[in-house]
Length: 306
Image 1 (cartoon, one colour):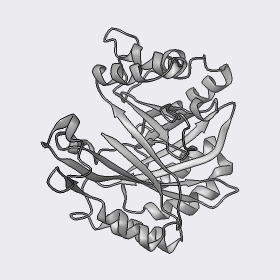
Image 2 (cartoon, helix red, strand yellow):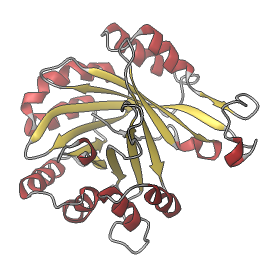
Image 3 (cartoon, rainbow, N blue to C red):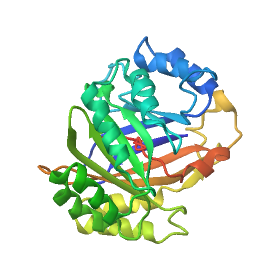
């Protein structure tokens, strides 16, 4: 399964690609294509069933597609690990994060991560953790699942109160939206970037609230009308018979289907900038289509990105 991340504001903007690795074979195959790096070592370790990284459920790799022609783009800018619900904070900061980044977390960063996890209400949990080292940052991104809009503001008021006014401006956009995620970055402090994302279990043909959410973004000038219509038209499928010129016949022959789905909408806010809205468009083989609408980011999931 893979996801395209696209900005919703009017005009041309970069598009990023995130790829999900869910098995040891996939991790080994990807590691073999990467140069020696912490990401390659992490994938190789995760592929070993008896390794200490076994609790990781899946891994997302995000690739920025806006580099210069000829630039080596096959190097992930963001690495994201999906976690079990009751993740041990000590394992997270002592084992997983050093493996993701290739270096130990600072004591200050570890203390802040433990503080943020300890402040979560019982209804919420850490779903994803991201290493941003590929973008030149030592920050770690946490993505929380299970907070309603009002609880998001309550949670942030105790951890990052300076962000509450900016976040309060965008939470109404997610009224009635299901499967909300909150993401923020931690370095030596909690950084002033907050992401809120949401999705629905069903696709737009059976869920009119997708269109309502996108309309609210248009009204706030965070999304163009043209991109709203393009997003709603994305879900569907292709096969060799509908797209023969683009179908990877040499790899898989003429069989199968590629299913396209909406994953989620994200709005990123910063106290000194205008909010930015993004859409995450999922595609993959038909046998994995049930995962397309799952509560994912990165990248957030992102899939994932800033």
